[in-house]
Amino acid sequence: MNWASFSDFLTMNGHGFYVWCAYGALFVGVVAELISLKRRRGAILTRLRREARNRNLEKGN
Image (tube, rainbow, N blue to C red; front, top):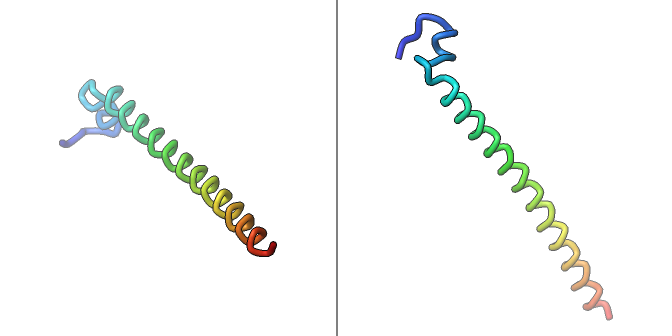
């Protein structure tokens, strides 16, 4: 597709609102997923450290 101007590109023959909302929703979803993965990883690492510490304490007794 060829657009005569940047404004034509943004409006995309009247479909711009739908297209840019779709890209926005995708971006929000990807960012939310990345944040969720980071939090989940942190929680798992914390749990693993706690379990390892507990095992070391049990072996010491």
